Image (cartoon, rainbow, N blue to C red; front, side):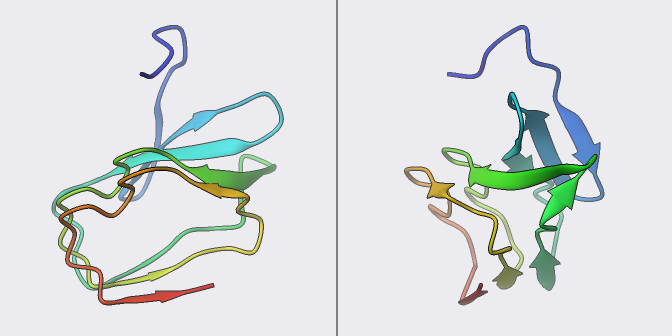
Length: 87
């Protein structure tokens, strides 16, 4: 469960939260289609986590993940149209 004191931010189709020294991707627009690239850095902090259910039921078919990731949480891509993931 997300911390209610954490304010979610947007970067294009991505929704994210700032952790102490890094960024967690928490969601994505359900209207996102085609390819999606997760940046290595947002607001000067590394993107280290793809949160639980972050891309659930999304329509984009390809995603590029940064090498800064250390955790992809449960069901991050459940029900999504993703066919190709590159790191």
